Image (cartoon, rainbow, N blue to C red; front, side):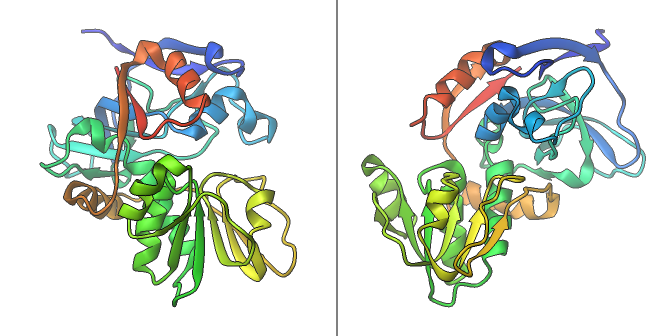
Length: 302
């Protein structure tokens, strides 16, 4: 039996061409940890930013040898550490966070905290489950930053994206009057989530959830004294005109992920897979995502 597994990393970040697939030693799960055989790992915009060196330049990554790629995953538990009651063979999905790490989910397997995973419902296949953890948890945590809407107006930029679509659905439940900003061809999807729709937004919104990372363009749409929630840690726009600025930093939360997966399985929350590609084609998948306009996530299969 091989005592190594394959994982995708960058040594000197420089975009898709800098991604390498290397062999690293298998490690056993420690106390409170599980090992998961990965069935799918989603390709998210944050992964492109890591591979390009954006977070290295911001001082958030200081790995001496290589940096791991990938945040969310789905797969099957193959081993558990002391104190873990998760059964071997359970189908799970989960999230790992932080930029400064030498491992990621673009891999054949992963050792992760048992608190960071949740069971995948029977009605949800592992490929689809792989696109849920980062965007589902990020959306829920972003809506926490928004707070209760009480009928106030909210503009969600990038409303047809994986993060934005979840924000639309969850913000409506918190009482916000939601309008999604997206391209014309995405109108049916956005309205299907119960939101109003626009392709061009004028200023004056009580709050903007900037899932599209418009940054300064996004904060310009907020009324004086309103609220802006961004998605670029370390690069949030300055507070102007009395606007409160908050920034999302997605965190693992297995308990919350469990109900997000259940709501995805029931169809209440959207989850879209654009294409399934082998791990060896990770660079090609990154190039396709970088071109923009992709609806749904690429999922890498080891």
